[in-house]
Length: 348
Image (cartoon, rainbow, N blue to C red; front, side, top):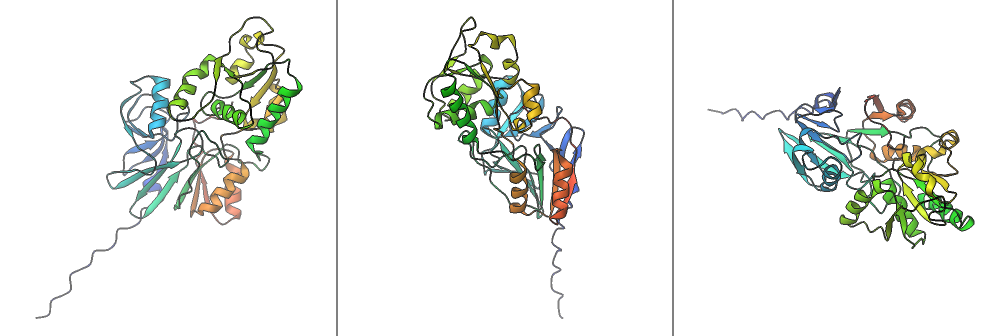
């Protein structure tokens, strides 16, 4: 008697992207794995891309992130910022209910990561914030082949083309030589930008102590603990209007317009931000020396990265969504603006 060959099981169907990841008021939600990516309100399980406050919030039940990002959150929010934490090194994978999660470098700030989510043959990558310019303070962006790339779009307009950061640092060095009697007061966001500006100055040959606002000291020390050598740093003290002539002082953007800044010697006000490409923004802030230094990808980096990865679909989380969606359409890539709320540029 002939026996029927055993019935081969059909291969599992590849899920649709919406079934694996979709937007909810809390943020991007992975239903099969029951977790959120960068939720904007407390949730039971969160995967965090990096330590900026619009992506990393306190109060979650469990937080999965790189060790550096967890350290940053601990520094900012205290030991009890989450019910429990799960450090995940770059390249290491964890699986929850059939969903594999892996973190790879995003090149944004120390510890920043893209979230690679894979399930039943479908791979989606959530970029978080990222850039492609070299930055010695963090691991460089690592492109990952995927079906759906979920990208930011902070500077997704053709007008935004960031010059090499070293050239912008050169402008600061030239101004210091031109105005040796004036303090150069540089506004830079406390996490990532301030440390990058310090490293750019060191690479340009500035070996003297750099003076820093008190709001930067703990994060500078954290970077040092993670192996990012910043050179000699001193507190930006001094009294009177003649303090620190010819020196560099780095402070949060809010401080350069505050009474705190009046103690310095006829300061040259500088601001390190991708928004300094827009002259009206520099005028609004009374910035004498705009420095176009950004920790976000510019137009060419965004479109070049998408072309390099070549996903079947592009999802756009926040920023200038329309222009990037139109570029994708013209290049044969289906796009979907998500218009997620709660994410702001840290240089605002």
